[in-house]
Length: 256
Image 1 (cartoon, rainbow, N blue to C red):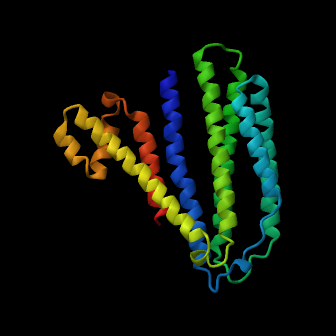
Image 2 (cartoon, rainbow, N blue to C red):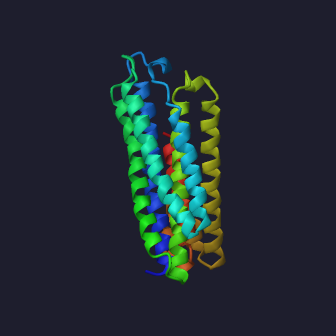
Image 3 (cartoon, rainbow, N blue to C red):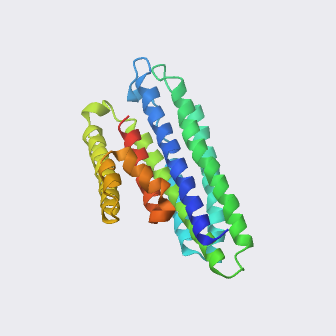
């Protein structure tokens, strides 16, 4: 497997996982709001160990970024430490009273969200072990593997921050009347601008190639995206299509 293929494979993996994690976060809001007489007081307090888990992931991401043998070993150790920390978090929440006003699926959604993340941490640990075993091999392939290893852990770290912020925000009373409403609108606006900028780039690219008809039809967003995605090799737009697709997926989820 060449470097470009492995790098693209990782991007596709991340692009497929991101909407999955975001969807589970929004499910938490749905279950919270459909509880009978649901209030934030009915939700159990978040264990302080979540902050420790966050610090561990931050240190793990930093270690992976170093790209050294010691950094890979530290990533492996910190990954196991994160899972151990999470096991205590789950234990604390199982003991907590959730109250009668909370949808019975809320707790399940929380465990699904964090367990899904933990499962991918396990996958990262496997990749850390593989990278350690082949670290002594020189060449571009090893360098790319170490880089992919770091990017994957950065993604899991960013995902965890999103999960933690979601767990904190979901406890804000009357979110529609709080700072969360304008914040949500701002996020949607930013994502919309990003999507439209990519569309403008696609139209400009097709116009400069003399494909005026395709450029005109690309005023329709789905048509523009399909051109960039399907003709990725011809136009050298694989990376652009991937980033554009992620932005569109995030926008759709944010508008729910």
